[in-house]
Length: 393
Image (tube, rainbow, N blue to C red; front, top):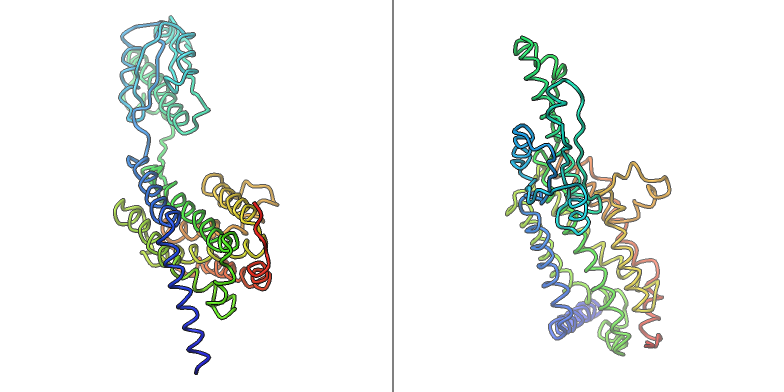
């Protein structure tokens, strides 16, 4: 009975000490509260409209007829496109795009209308700056659509002039009618596509860094022995007492981004809140476990923070939300499952987007639970580091 009381008292004393450290050092408040909130608001408001609107483009209309002017007015009417300037020639438009004043320009050479009306095949060109992937892709789509619509309109008028009926004209212009259905994100909302992973990924990276800093700073400040003494020289009690207050703060931050995404912005959440809340909690705890593991493996604060940052940054592309995992080389496919964010992403797709029953995601939940065993690999090595390692600048 006395032993149990001592254990509880030891952990509680470490908790009290850690809370005092967190409140007395501004780095904790900034990294655990201020930075996540800034990141959450930045990413969600940056893409608040879902898609970039009114992307600046230029035009070069050397033909300058009523038909080409109508084509450009229709192009300007697209939500993503804003024609900001008409250039006299190709060289001026290219220079403006190279200077970053416009993201694309539409080029109509002289004689386009005459060739089109005489049933010949004129050529119009559009140029996009692929250094800016998203605006270039959106402008390419709008300009290509406008070129096809203009071509279809001229062909339609030609067929009408030849005496074809409406049904015959549409059968010639569009022999196969196509329908497009964007599953799970019908509005092609980039915020739904990116924010659901960027926010937890950013939080994961901060957890890595704060966990490592909070442990290795004890060595740097020469307080690690006192920390262990308060925990009855038990490394598990010491870690539990240190990480528990941090966990509570991280849980509040996790709940904040869940409310922001699924309550305020009303992003798809077909299986309800609890599957994603569980995934968020597991990602937080796993991130702490990974931070402890790096402290065990690397006694140097600089090395541990560097590896954690590298691992966190690599999590963004290798999770598969920006580039499909199925297209990875075989070694990278296997490596991707060693990143907790990959499993969180798969849970998000199955539960929030597709609304599948929970048992479809049990492998990913189980994988996250496996990561919790990482701190059990070298606990004595960490204890030895806390007792014997001498920090060097």
